[in-house]
Image (cartoon, rainbow over all chains, first blue to last red; front, side, top):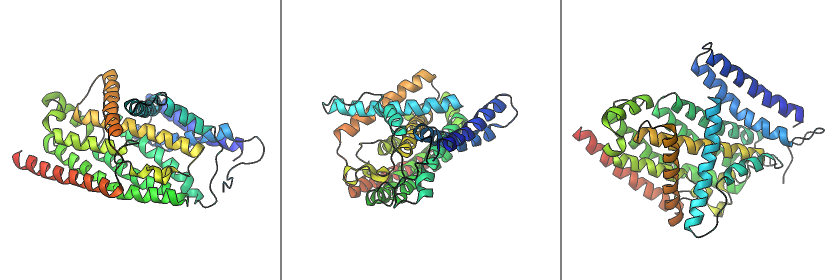
Length: 67
Length: 280
């Protein structure tokens, strides 16, 4: 995966999560909507962050055939 | 809620580190530092990540997302005082996730780990009986109602101690290095997670941290009730240490013995709940 794709994945998870937190604190969206965004976004954020750290700037490195 | 999610992840990993440390000290080994599991999670984030040639890529990656997602959901259900049944449904889903982990890689070690995960589903039977015992007294399975009941009537730990023991066995079956940890037995290398390395393993570590925190918090809320936050954390540490002691002094059972003992416990619990039901 290219580094910019990993960054995009991470941001695609983090931005809606932060947005949902703000909207929920203002009472603009119900709790279940906030929870749904977190449940979908947190796993993507964790993997996106790890992939971003290790991805190379140039060629994609996943999938690497490990065997 | 995001802060609680991050705290639960790191504190759950810290509890697993304490678990390893206590086991090591009881066995007269120095053991790793208590923050070792947090370091593990960070370390795996920086490791080279790959998808094995024999793996189903979609399942191999997707199951990591599902693993984190379901325990995130479980934490949110607890924090919102939702249904205990949802927590236990997620616990059941985790079995399927473990199975998915094992089968997705194409590795024989992973497959055996996944199969053992299904075999050890017997550990869920005491869980259902626990739910029945709680429902007899509280007339509700909403965590908020169970906590409110205990504020009036006292901890359920004193009212239905055997149900607490059954839940404790369930916690024990989920702790690594325990007598029922047949899914991660050393003859299977690392069991269902053998081939998940790098970022995928880091994701699994996050899942394990959340799972440990959620299960211990569930036990405290359901059998002790509402406590100040700092006391909840101390109670979690104490329960973890007690689980570590059991894990340190008991050998890992063979799959057949593990399932047999858990089934016997389930049978005793069914009889206990039947007596409770008749007497209430």
